[in-house]
Length: 115
Length: 110
Image (cartoon, rainbow over all chains, first blue to last red; front, side, top):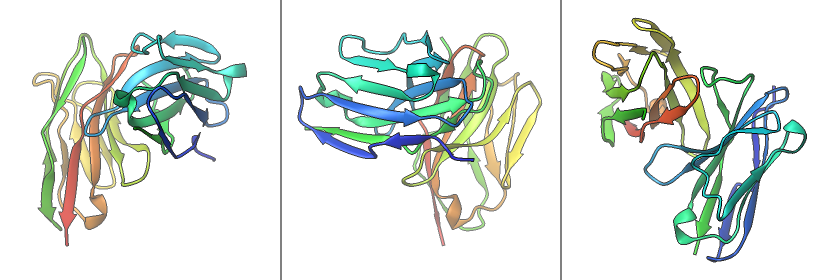
């Protein structure tokens, strides 16, 4: 079974530029999560999708971050414009059904550096 | 709100030493508890979980017991290997939200 795929693996941009990350979850997984992991900290949930609907985006900085999940499969996370403090690893995860009791399967992450 | 606290790292052990990584939580109700591991350059992987009080999760020689009376879920392994070097995250879920601790880096020396 293929795992969660993410691209790119690394990205370096200047502040105020835009950037987008892509995630392809495990086939058939209804729930998709985006996390931000700042160096030395645990992952922080940014947004959770159930199929193509948003379940929780309470910690997403909506003035600069946006995310979509077209057709309930792939998802993109965008930052526009980026700030220095956005430097982090962005993790995508998926789980088979709704409800956070289920195991989440994580992708390798995208490491973003904002200069 | 819900939260997870872990012992600060890094933890450095010699091969075959006994490992304990402490984890305590604050939550309403009866959350599920998890340990995830992140090997260098890789994504997080579920190591073990427990869904109710007194449950013991185990995998790859690691164990953790859900202790509701002490709100703890400490990770233990009797004999660590160099290949266990990684960052370990304690996490909880109340069915709505998933909360991770800050992680504990373990280094095992040969």
